[in-house]
Image (cartoon, rainbow, N blue to C red; front, side):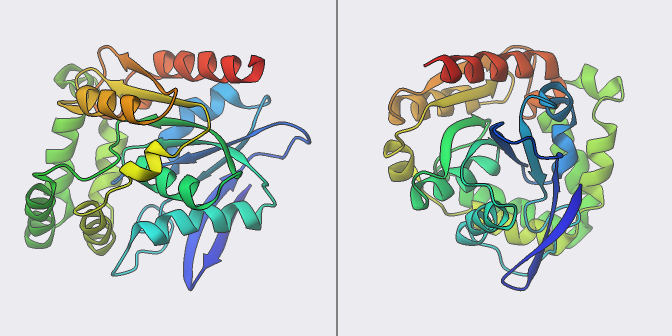
Length: 264
C-alpha cells in the first residue's frame, strides 16, 4: 500500500505491507541518492513475518524536495510516519544517510525504537567531510545529477558488479534525483554529530559495513565501540550499498540479528 504523508508542508512517500497484528515492524530508511526501492530484496525476504514500512527520505524519490533539509527534519519524518500508521515502536534499518537519521530519531524518541540495524553510515561528519560534500554540491549545481550519479556509482560498487548491469537501475534513479534535493541533503551531511546519541543507545544494535567501502569498516568499528553492546559484521565483496550488491549475505546478517534479539 502506497501513501503520501504530509509533514509540516512536505509530502513524504511511504509504502507499507498489509499489517499483521502482533508482528514487529521493520522501518527501512534509504541512503542519499536512492529511494525506497533499494530495499526490495529485504522486503521480499522478510515479507509475511514482519510488518514493513519503507519510505523516501525527503529530497528523494517521490517525496518532496525542499530547498533546505536538516536532520531534525529527517528524523521528524520518521516519527510522523510512525504516528500516521499507528506504529508504537519499530526495528529501524538505516543505510548511509539513514544512519544519522535513525540515531537522531532514537535519541529523541526513547521507546519507539526497539532495535537498530545500521549499515555503511557514520555517527558524525568526518574531518574532511565538509570539503568533500561541498565539492559534490558544486559539481551537482554545475553539471546536473547525471555526472554526480556516474561518479557516485563508480565509488559505491565493484567494477564487475557495474559491468554486469547490477547497478544500472540505481544509476538511473540517482541521475533523475532533483538537484535541489541532493544539495539540501548533502548540506545536512556536511556538519552533524550524533556521537552522544550513539553512546546513549540502550537497545540492541547490529552494524553492517561493506568490506570495499573505503574507510567505512574502520569508521563503523569505532561506532561499535561507542554504542553499548553493538556488534559489527563486515560484508565481503560489497561496497557502500551491500544490501543491493550482496543481498543474500545482508539478509542473513539481518536474520541472525533479528533471531538473536527475539530469543534474548
